[in-house]
Length: 276
Image 1 (cartoon, helix red, strand yellow):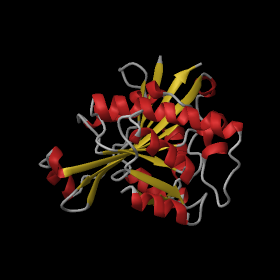
Image 2 (cartoon, rainbow, N blue to C red):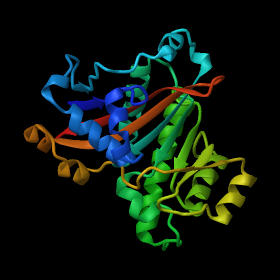
Image 3 (cartoon, helix red, strand yellow):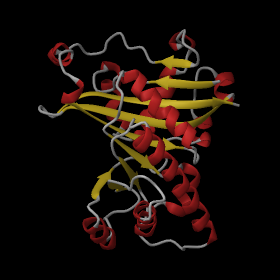
Image 4 (cartoon, one colour):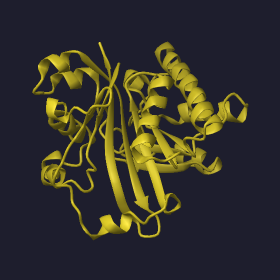
């Protein structure tokens, strides 16, 4: 049985906002805080395998009443998926979890971060990495994952309207684009997002390539590793027995924004676990 941990709307939670300064806008610290405050017996829901953070003091400002009148067409929903391993089935579960919570049929965009198991070889760095057998092996797994997700999420089910990739070098991005142009996959990345922590500037060859192929170049400030099995086991949780029996498999963060007003309506984390 899988286990899900769903955070409060961090954009409205008074408790989360009070803690925000010490979290330093770090996605890794935000996820750690959510897990430490949510994986408790009192947060267990009747639904199978669900821990849902409860915050009786979620803000009820004037925007809340207005939000109820906002239609799906007025919202832009962006998500970012942090996988531990190369697993299309887990990625699909993560997207379904977000859509279920939102009660929507699709996400407008999904950014795919390089899975934790492949970051050493594939993650962009200030200096290019060797393209050895280890790199080729990880690249092959990423290409297979991208193919499956682009076919399932974008092509067949249309649960995601556009999909981008994060933190890969130009050569890796080229491989994904070439696969799409050769018909091996149904869609190429619409964007590339580069972390400022791992690469201080976007490489010139990437900018040139993206410009030629109409790929948006974005930047982000997420930690290199938001959550891993090792990071999870190092957390201090109330229920150590529960902690020992769980292994994280993905983190998904989504944000919905009222397009005409530029107002963030909701920001939420969902963490997926499998039982050992």
